Length: 153
Image 1 (cartoon, rainbow, N blue to C red):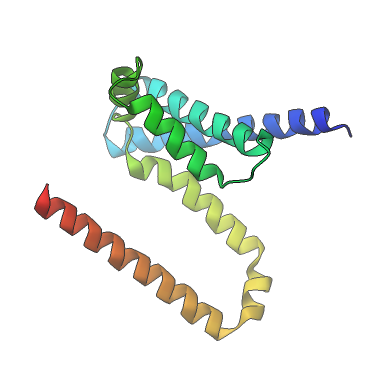
Image 2: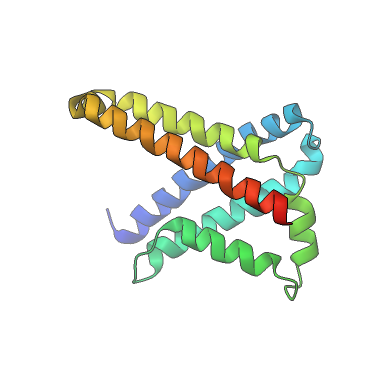
């Protein structure tokens, strides 16, 4: 398969995955009560476009960086006060609940871990202890940062 056909197939896979995540997140956002489904669509489309652009950049640019860096930079550039679309982007994305977005991502992570459970089991009890410590540490540090921000803002 040529490189163009391979990239085209990969883009189709990304678009399908993004559509599925957006659909699940729209339902989750409606359930959370943050906003209605119709009101949330522009924000979801914006986030989907940011994600797709980030995936394309991480694939096409000669230097390799994690896709999340591209997501952060594109999102930041779109939301900066001097951006002509800043108000629309911020207003649209503010209608989306974080829990609505994290639900499909965590579900996917669960499927991936479940699929690789045998490999994970080979690591043994030490790997489980390290994993639990990482999760607890991440939770505690995130909570501490949130507490500091809440007190000083």
